[in-house]
Amino acid sequence: MAIDNTLVMIMAGGEGKRLYPLTKDRAKPAVPFGGRYRIIDFVINNFINSGFYKIKVLTQYKSDSLNKHITRGWALSPFLDQYVDLAPAQMRTGNDWYKGTADAVYQNIFHITDEDPRYVCVFGGDHIYKMKVSQMLDFHIEKKADLSISAIPIPIEEASEFGIMEVDENWKLINFVEKPQYKPKSIPGQPDKCLASMGNYIFDKEILLDALNRDARKEDSSHDFGKNVIPMLLEEGKNIYVYNFATNSFPGMNKAEQGYWRDVGSIDAYWQANMDLLDYDPELNLYSKEWPLRTFNYNYPPAKFVWEEGDRVGMATNSMVSEGCIISGGGLSHCVLSPKVRINSYSSVTDSILMENVEVGRYCQIKKAIIDKNVIIPPHCKIGFDKEQDLKRGFHVSEGGVTVVPKGAIL
Image (cartoon, rainbow, N blue to C red):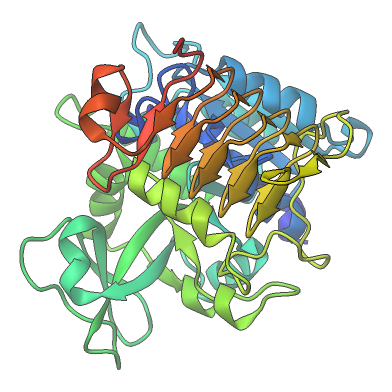
């Protein structure tokens, strides 16, 4: 089978500057999401659920928490030649860290030559979506493509924010423009839409190895797939096809989930994607039995809700509460809680994300906030109500008004 002859390389070295301070001590793919997951869990689940079991995770920036998560949570069976292996930056080709996405794969080229696959998947590790990757591989093989790129249709007026691919009627790539400042060519048959690159690629191995070796010798290259390698291959007339992610389907998919893909690259986008999980019929369903979302399992007790005395009621509405949490006489509304969060009596928390091991003291009021892990909030604190006051206390406030309390902050 083609899947068995495919090596997966996940790019997980992203710094995630726009997610600061959530990325102060961790890489973007390691940022918690949806209570008990990490961002990288979604792309790994996509491959595992699609039948791909040879996976290399390329790490670089502040990767300690990511390394621990992968090691503890993603142990496949080496007896069956299945693995999710870490591939940390090692400066194997010189004295530089990864200079771009193509250079990251080039510096790990020995993984490809050692495994000797027929196909190589190069996917990003910092987006939220579900995808049956085997359908894209089938497309790649059917088209006899040298390279296939997954893309998502977007309104043409948003083109300047993405890398845009222009295709012919057969979905063969004819032009690639990074964040065009003009109106790009629309999708055939859809005049109001264009195609944004998702940064996910399937290469024939020989095409990839040759392109990486030639790009590495170019001193004026940024050594990036989007900026350098793809334009080079396009200019040379290689068979490059674009896979329409909106046509992808997976077991258990509901109508709202078709084409769902989020780049949670900013605080506001990250907050909104978490809040979207709380909808009655969410665009991303975490509860599907047909498409399980695996992650590292904590050995914590079930969540507990205690006290029901007058206005001292432990209660959560329209919220997700992870294991190990204790809601002790306080109230939650429209919140996402990671494991081991404690909400004490008479406190109110709304529209917020609380990460692992956060404790909220009595009589606190919190709204539209992200509280990073290991923060103890003393009694009577108000967060998210006064921007100037929040900034004075060293918190970050996003353009959309989301207050972020950094990891381990002392209040």
